[in-house]
Length: 230
Image (cartoon, rainbow, N blue to C red; front, side):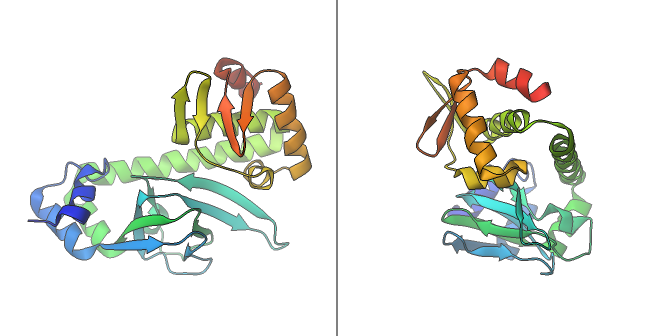
């Protein structure tokens, strides 16, 4: 039987939960648990894309830096989410940076073993295709937003997206349970830190959000969606 720690997590991961017992055992044999301290890099540009990672605990940050050294944050990934998915459809090395945003535990699966599993299990292959497509569409939407939307609209879109991934509801609304500085928010929406500070102040004055330290509370999501879509 598979071990309780790693095997239990494999069974609980939605991407892998319907695999047969033998396939679960193979994953347990070939995978490796990794404990990373905050800011430890999982990969850097030009590293081979030879491993698929699933977040067991903590948060990963994916980013890209241009020739001038300006960073654009592409996303954050937390428990049960898979990263490195492009490795299964592309032989090219990574062109991004992935690092632990906080202390993080990963399950690392060699790409070749994961691809073999996909070839034997059509539903897993379909889920991977869907994941790649959804993330590509999300990036295309972000590019469109960067080109054509105001900073306020981009900020509303970001908060709603983070609310979906990291939101915890309370009596005030939905708390985005991810502590971000204004500089980090700026790198997510392609704006300056000063622009982000003024935009957040405007959203607070208009009653759309509240702030609590580095956390944001979504107070009026219908109006945030209207601003996002404007």
